Image 1 (cartoon, rainbow, N blue to C red):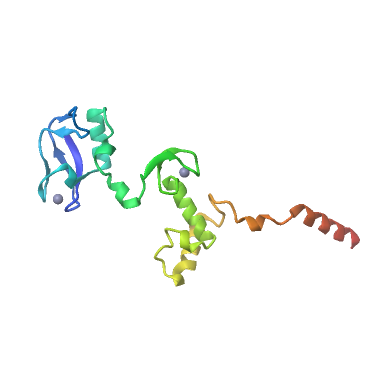
Image 2: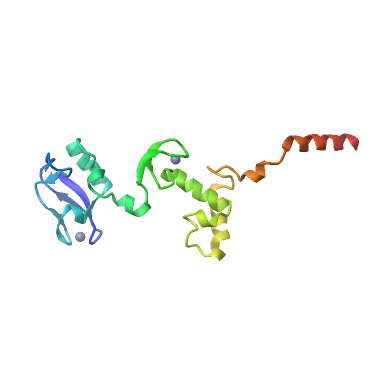
Length: 178
Ligand SMILES: [Zn+2]
Ligand SMILES: [Zn+2]
């Protein structure tokens, strides 16, 4: 069968016919009948390649009895830092791969934008490495694109502590006096 790989050495994505895929009983890795050959680097071992998303589904379909993700490092994990563990997202309760804060990718993005909206630069991944002079620019950009309202985080508590009811009644009284 043909499986889609990405070479760790040269970064090339290629299809490779690996022949029959079998699952040896004494191993947690599948074994391929033929070698993995990168068009540029030649023969590659399983440790020398990534399984692309396409390759993962190809391999899972072929074997069905094991999780392809357990065998190869997924390229996505390395790039985004996601996939530390699976669980329920703190933000939306979806069961998925989470980052180190227990958030899914989407909620992590929301939190990051919220941090920037609240000017919590130090905690934001987006603002990380952004020069101080550009921070407001970044914030304006995010507000222009996603709006000013916080998406996931609760507004800072001291803003909510105002005793709203008392204020209203005071206003009413003063209104009557006038
Ligand atoms: Zn290569
Ligand atoms: Zn989420």
